[in-house]
Each structure stands twice: as structure tokens, then as C-alpha cells.
Length: 446
Ligand code: PLP
Image (cartoon, rainbow, N blue to C red):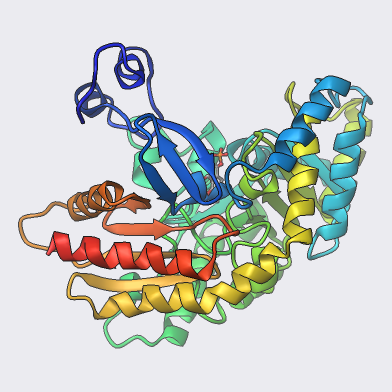
């Protein structure tokens, strides 16, 4: 990148440590600095247009430049810019949002609890699960099972739940009491001659073996994304969630559905829980709850979780948890307006209508000599590149990513997989533009 002195790019290099970035490479190469957004497009500081094929970080569902969200924020900012929900205080937007989420929940839920990020929501879920076990007089029931390649965030507990090496390596994680079971990626992890049903049965057996080895009385919860996102867009095989849930029920283990990516329409239903017929006790929500115009996340908890938690708080005198900006009025007002837009414009219907085209174009790329697999559901998907001699893992992926950026398309490289998760307002013609660009980029990579 050609970085001009005193440009945004140069100042970024001078002062800014980035998340998920090789800091030494950044010192040399600099970052791609965005200036503004409109619809499915973002524009860098040189005015170059890109399709945001990842909706930011799987999150800007209603697209960029949505004025209704700007107005909702401004109105709330003027009326009551901040208030909190500690010590029996409340404000209108958090009450309305809690009510709305409980009404929308795909399974019966009792209460909504607010946090600011997906990581905090999952961290809070872990603490609620521990608190509940203590309330029930089962202090030994604290272990949590997650999955290899699952992504649940970066705080100490959430990064421990995450099943990706870079979130553990050199951070001395995971913490004790967190375990990772098999990843349901059939193509990558199937054994020779194993069909999908046998693969699912093996995943489930590995989970049950782990529960038995650890002692069912010590295992409190299982956490999973309906569809794994940051692990590489991994869609579970048919029957997977049903079989997993039978095991969880058998051993009295709570299910936490991490809906941070799937929630609010991404899989073609309002929640991934509906798409995969899950019955979670806790759901964690973020990203498309506000289309990331404001940082906000939420947990929905059912009676099974709420009642013991309420008892314990009465015994102690408080539920000793909460962050200053939880249920922030401006973020809550924006989330409410964002959900209204998703409903009024039937963006979930748009995801459903475009999914055959989107997934069809991804699947068709399997006939390209460089592609080993195309996968996805709704408006989330990925292609995976065939390993090639002379290229370390991830090198081809990052090369293809750069070629696509050059051509004005932003995706996300996850090793040698390239993920796509565009704003849900996308049109059929724009879906075609994305995959025409992917094809042209693959031809450059040849
Ligand atoms: N859970 C899932 C499924 C996610 O994809 C993410 C972020 O990508 C998180 C949790 C963490 O959310 P945050 O980055 O807001 O902490």
C-alpha cells in the first residue's frame, strides 16, 4: 500500500494497535481505512468503492447509511443519553427492547439481560450457569463444553469457549473447566467411507464419551452456534442438533445457543434456533440486533435459568453482575428501530428468497479447479481452496482475499476459506456481482 505522510493510513500505523492483526506486518503495510458507507457498499479514504461482502463483521444487516437508525440514535441522545439498569433502575428503551426480544424469542424465554458485545454476553452466560448451579446446591456442576472451531469471543471465559488455537496460544487459555468436543464439519473431519449419518453419530458419541469421562454431574452446559461462523462457516449436517440435544437432555445439561451471527435473519429464519429446531435455555444475541450501528448484546434466559438465579440473588441480596453501559438507552433505541426495519422490510424474507441464488453460486464454484468446497445456508457461506504445494496453510486464502479487495469486494479469509455474509438488503443482481468477482479473482489466482 502506498502510504502518504500524515495520511489517515500513516497516522493509523503510528498510533493504533489493531485487533486480529499481525502488528509487525501492519507497521510495514498499513491498514485499509474506510471513510463512509451506503447500502451494501463502503468507500475508502481514496473514494474507492467496495461491496462489503461480510456486512462488516457479519453484522450490518440493514446495510450502511440507514437514516432511520441515525435518527433513532439522535432522538434518544437528546432525550436521555445515558442511564443504567443497576440497583433497580430502568429506562424506556431497555424495557421496550427486553419486551420485544422476549416476544420474538423462538422458544419460551423469561427475561432479557443486556451486555455490550458478543464476548460479554457469552461470558455472562458462563457466570449465570455457575451461579445457577450454586443456587441449586450443585457446586460441582460447573463444566462447560464447547466445540473445536466454535467462536464465542475473546474475554477470558469466552476465549476459553472459543475452539480456535489463535485465541488460546500465548494467552494461557483455556481456563480450567472448559472442554472442546468435535466440530461438525463433515467434509473436513469424516473418516474414510463414513456417510453423513455415521459422522453425526460419531460426533454425538464423542460428546457423550466426554460427558461420561468428566462425570455428568459436573457438566453444566453446552454452547454452540447454530451455524459456526468465524471457524469457517460450518453448517451442521442433517440431524446433528437433534441428536446433540438428546444427549444434553439425558444428562441434564443446559444448551446455550450463540446466536451472535445467526440471530435476526442470517440463516433464513429470524433465529438459527428455528432453522435447526434447537431448544436452548440461554440465547446470546449481538451484531444484527442493532446492525452494529451501536454496540449492544443480550442474553435471553428461560425459567430454568431465571428462577434459581432469582432465588440466589434474593439469598445473597443481589445478582452481583453488570456493566456500566449495559442496555444503554441509545444502543437500545437503535436496536429497536433496527428490528423494526428488519420486520417491516421483511429482510428475513429477502434472505429466504435469495438463498437459492447465493448458495447456488457458492456450490457452483466447487467445479472450479481451485475450490475444494462451497458451503453455507441463508445468506452466509464460504468457499474453501484446495491446498497447493509451496503454499503454507492460509497463504492462498489471503492471496485470494487481496485479489478480491483489488477488484472491490471485501470477504473474510479464514485460513484457506473465504467467507461471505453480505448485508441482508442485498439484491439478486448484487449477489451475482459478488460471485462474478469471486470467479474472476479465482482466475487471477490460477
Ligand atoms: N459469538 C459469535 C458466534 C461471534 O461470531 C462473535 C464475533 O464474531 C462473538 C460471539 C463475539 O462477539 P464480539 O466480537 O462482539 O465480542
